[in-house]
Image (cartoon, rainbow, N blue to C red; front, top):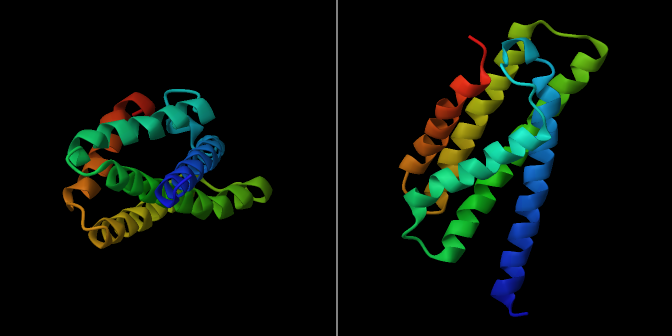
Length: 150
């Protein structure tokens, strides 16, 4: 294997790991906010949502090289992994001291805000178009009506 193949293999391994941890974490977090969800959220649904995010953003970065696309997806999934890890404290707190719904939702949106700012920083550092940050949000806004019970 040459060095670029090794790097891509590592990226893909980390991406799969990130998808798995994110899916498991968000399915666990969903139990804390199940009353506002229309579907019984689980790791399979979240895995599909994450992969859907990658596919949704593909047309916006299609002109980039294959390596740049993989590097962007790798970066985005690391940000998702970071967000998942940031949810662990509220999940743990709720095990021992259940919190009101609004506390869990505020915590979640705080994490999402940090993820968005991190995404903006990473997109700039990778010299990619800033609108990628907004396509990330757009995708999530498009799927919310299918997930939220409002």
